[in-house]
Length: 139
Length: 74
Image 1 (cartoon, rainbow over the protein chains, first blue to last red):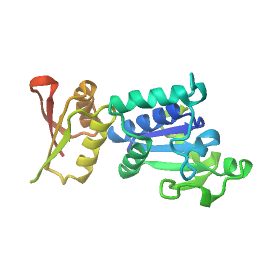
Image 2 (image 1 turned 30 degrees about the vertical axis):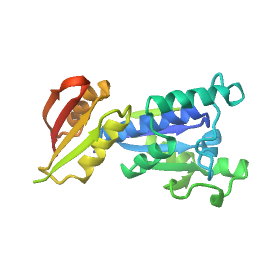
Image 3 (image 1 turned 120 degrees about the vertical axis):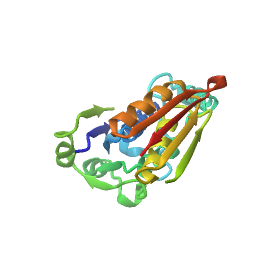
Image 4 (image 1 turned 180 degrees about the vertical axis):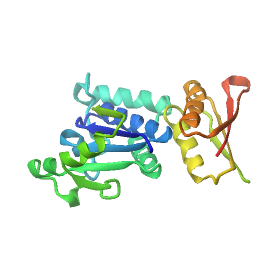
């Protein structure tokens, strides 16, 4: 059976969303079956136009720090979050959106990137995947 | 049997791994995927992924200017 990775994306910080997608894509490249669960602040990144909107988790400095890091990333030829998401989907990765976050934060399905989201779910779906996963992460 | 070329020169983590995986998914059994890149860690990690997926690593070749070439049989 294929090995599984179940990753919770709780943070909406730009650098942490990058970490989640790099890890997810790396796991897919290793032949694993990968699930990214977007909840709380992470879910905000799945809003239309929201992918690159997250601040830097440290030294954001009202966006100055983020701007500097983005510039460095461009120089180092790091792929954009959009490209990483498209790769994730192309390699068969699953993107799950937490429906409770949608309720409490007033996020509607039509506000979200339906092209990226595979399903809407709760904790039961996460645990059902995580119980057989060899890699579980909370970001 | 087809030979598929993947060019990742100048690309960084995780692009060479991801592009290799994409090519391997598209390849038929027996096809050869040849990846060329410069990202140092990918030179070690692509063979790890090949092993993890139970495929055949045909060779890892060091060329000049930090360029490496990896051949895989699906």
